[in-house]
Length: 225
Image 1 (cartoon, rainbow, N blue to C red):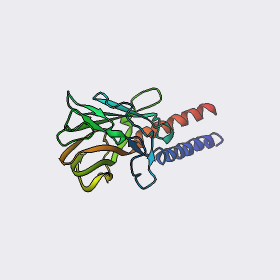
Image 2: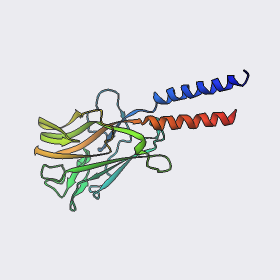
Image 3: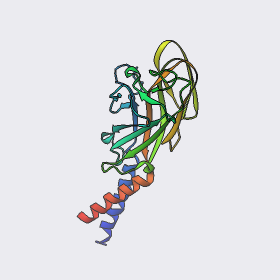
């Protein structure tokens, strides 16, 4: 009977740690491609991480943005990398005057033009040792911001459009519930020029990753007893 009590405690620890893991580690992340001063903030208390701008007037294609997400509590996540590619051998990128991603070598070097090639985005999450842990996460692209005046675009398969008197930042909610949006495209379809200002993601650890983390904690606890 005396030996059964510690085993019951171990079972309680397993249940408690698994429940705790299942309720922690999710985060909403807003990725900015501008200088952080020229955009209308999205409502809802979203977390903006590492407001970023291009450091030069033109950067090579493809280009990888790196964001520190170590403080957001996503299981093991240290950095988020977004690689942007114009799928073109001639185009590069510019900062669009500090407003966001523009394409150099297309219709207008300060903007993203309907004549320019589609943009391809690849998302990778790494831990503190630069290991790729993307497969252990559910990544959902939930929002998108573009600075434009008139026209249409398709982002991650969803059509968006606007008609404004002058260029301004417009925020769009995208289809939610996707579980593997680590690769998606954006295409200008009609109208005026634009600049990509922001992407919004929800990132949640996969249940299997949480369970492995919980079991690891249990193993350490048992060794310390």
